[in-house]
Image (tube, rainbow, N blue to C red; front, side):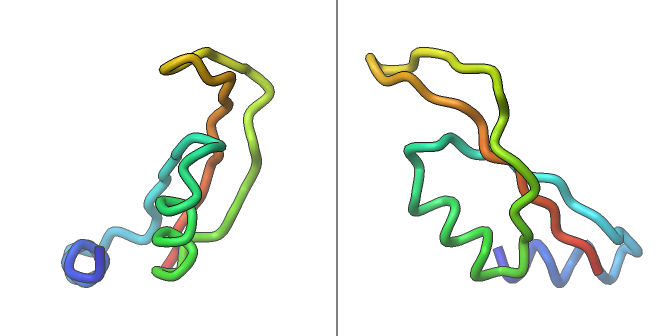
Length: 62
């Protein structure tokens, strides 16, 4: 993730959007550790592998 963010900065990219699922706490922690800010949890729910989930949205800005 660090290499991705360094490369995008060099390319002039100023914003990256990301999303994960409500049950994927590890991904949420990785995003937050790398400077992504929580935006919202989506209202739409879906079932994946027998679990009721929603998307969690993040943004990184330089």
